[in-house]
Length: 296
Image (cartoon, rainbow, N blue to C red):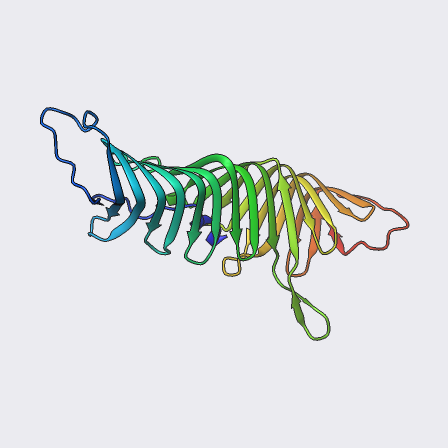
């Protein structure tokens, strides 16, 4: 969870109040003309940096070539960095930078990599500095140590440490280690969660909220949870699933058996589920594969 959120907050550090631009050609000022009246310039090599009020570099953007027209800079082979609690790198084949607003638009093979190795990949990405918003309407794929998440469209507010995948969400996440066997061995279990979306992520509470036709499958057992809303809590150190709370038209499928309830709580360390709210169990007499479920 920590790596995922950092991977979507490219320029989430302090807003730069000073800029340092480096190109290999100096464009002279033209008397009586605004920057937009000056002919476009082609540059080999481009470097734009932002600094904190204390004079420390907070981010930089570099490119192989730059097409400059007033405040608009089109850059090829973008390589950007954000410096702060954890450094973040971003690369893209094309970028459009507005020097006046600080907004950045990126296109083609956009890859964000956090210092701890989490990555986010998409085709386009817009960063609006004044709105504290990172946004794309394209498909997004996020890869971290113990999870892979895909979805269509994304919005993230870096300073609020919140992000939303808009639709068609598929998450494959490792749960907390389970102790099994006489030798007390630890075995990872995985859960795949799908939903129509949106899915909202909150770094402060270490939670991900899935909505609309949510379905979670415990891959080792085949047990399936269905609900209107599913809140997943993560261990902040391991980034693995710690617990799941399902509400609204909850269904638990175990083999041919189905249990209906108002609420279900799943704890990953013991893989136990507790159902509340007048649960109703439909049992297949020939099914002997169901695991322990507590009903209150």
